[in-house]
Length: 128
Image (tube, rainbow, N blue to C red; front, side):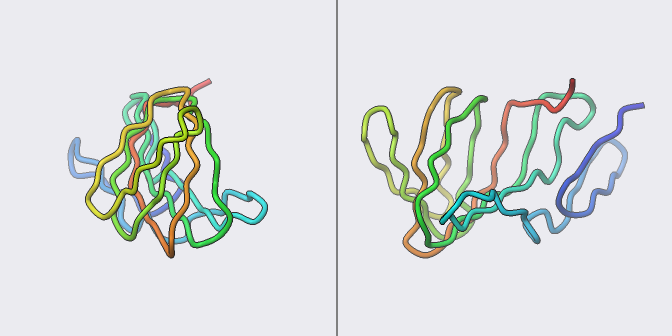
């Protein structure tokens, strides 16, 4: 039997359907100096998959620079993000309902004028 782990929210199952409620509440800080950012997996590696999903929150503060070690897609749920590709210097503004893809190896500078909340799904595992 596979054990699913949820780090944020409450997990319930209805047959094969996994549901996490309140997966965006109480996100743990990323502990980056000067950056008001929080992230948490609502569910990772269900049924042994390499998928993980959760929420990323950024409040107006210093920018967060992050390098992806896995492929990830993100949906902007609330607010907006200003994203700079650190390799090219190109900038895009992502607003509510925009979908983003970050290929493995991408380094991104995340900023927000006020607040941004994103839902992410990543191709990563916590298995040993």
